[in-house]
Length: 124
Image (cartoon, rainbow, N blue to C red; front, side):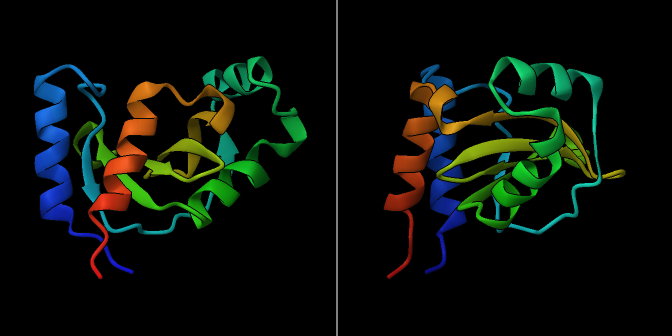
């Protein structure tokens, strides 16, 4: 099923105005796969804090990219947030490096709300 991105972005905009989601979430777009090739020092630190072993960061991140239900373009198109049911990853577009990564155990109310809205915006 495809997603009505116009409707989703309108809803996300309303949620931003009411401070229900992160102001920097970005713009929802159809998922464009990217090859994850490296890990930033920040991402390595955050992954360790979140229980993702250093030797599994790239494969875990690629899994989140491949299974993403939606992608958000961030930082003027320089980064992409891939949101999947298992976790999320932000990837730098120009070099394929993980900026940050987290598992579904770290999903806050904002991310859970976005997932709900994505499901509601699926075209039938």
